[in-house]
Length: 328
Ligand code: UTP
Image (cartoon, rainbow, N blue to C red; front, top):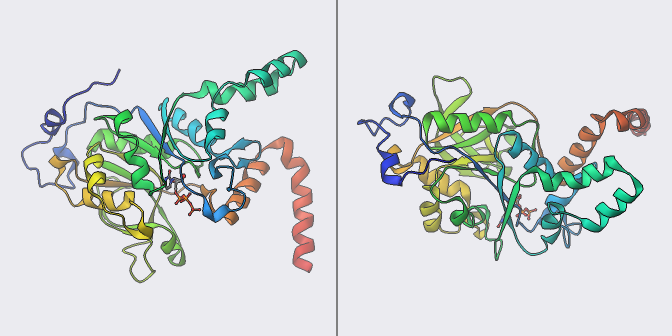
């Protein structure tokens, strides 16, 4: 069970030199472990219209599972079995997907179709899933704020509902970094200069661990000239609960939305005793943004070709298709 301590007591776990931002030796491990995952899935999905007019983009299938199920599976693989979904208008299908489907189950049971029955029950058995509605999609920062009463005074993970990461190793490592060093942790992936304008980009300083950096600045969707680096924030975060008071005060930023990046930048500028310090874990694996059309199609192909039952049929067709296309 989570050990809860008032914020004031937890602050005492820092040693005397509170200004030593980057020196993890001065931080004693936080007693409250990360046990909860927050999955924002209340966005409008405008990049995928009209498909997302009545269907949440998080429910678009990647082969035969909706994207958001992979995200919940990743949280569970990182031992986060308490999952809070932030949903909104048109998101009923997400709730239905993680619920029992009695009529369907009875029909499959009657047919003795055990495999499909298991696949239908699986999403319901995965985790303890809770829901809170974001009345209006006012941005990712606002969506995270909707988790405040559920999360309370504990660190928590945020997994974007349309962002797929190859394995749970990244999230596990981020939780480990949070447990060792405190503060908040973002996942950083190196992108091409022409892609930086699609992401929040971080200015970073190295730590003594090769895959961990300290974030000193963040710029949301910069031009290549403005970008402080090519390290882009991707859809996994571990947040200190001090993010909530910061988010309450964060004004709408880019696109008129309350940006999580703006709140994290405010945190990065704070002292450790005020819940400051933002670390970055450098990620070099594969990540798929299923809210973006070209990436969605790549994801579908990649996931399908990893499945022996589909690869045998698809690969010869794909080779033939590509050679015909090249000739043309
Ligand atoms: P995106 O910016 O990718 O989602 O947010 P979006 O706004 O739906 O996308 P487009 O640009 O209109 O196509 C990343 C994640 O944050 C959630 C989204 O559902 C997505 O999973 N989100 C975003 C919210 O939950 N609430 C918001 O107000 C905004």
